[in-house]
Length: 159
Image 1 (spheres, rainbow, N blue to C red):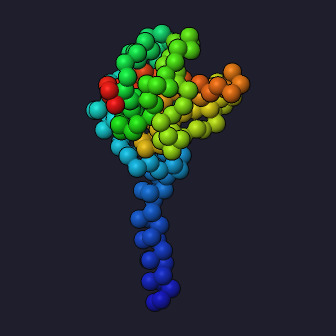
Image 2 (image 1 turned 30 degrees about the vertical axis):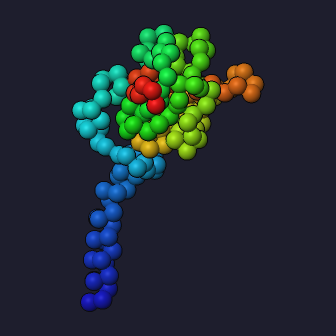
Image 3 (image 1 turned 180 degrees about the vertical axis):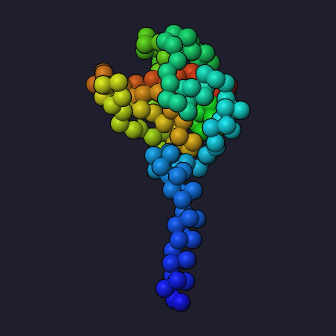
């Protein structure tokens, strides 16, 4: 009788943990404070924002909304509103994407090794919701370049 109860308990525990294991496997094991389903993200983001932030896409060079923005303010994550970059750190890199010399805080952005497409680079991800932002380049020694897709950003003027 005790053995049967033990087996029931273990099988029940396993069944209850399967949904959590499935979520764990789907997102690569990383959990974020702000999480939504794909359907929820698709409802709140434009198709381009969804492609860039949730599918790790890249917008066309020289086409982004904030490439030539010179206003003072704060650039936030379009998905969750996390503060990412202040306009004081923005510069024209000539690459076709908004570029920044530093984030507002190192805690607001995760840097993840990215070897996709046979390249060796560093992916930038929002630490609050996991949104793909762009990439960090160190092609000029001592001058990091945070190259960010406009579609991943929301600008708040005067902040």
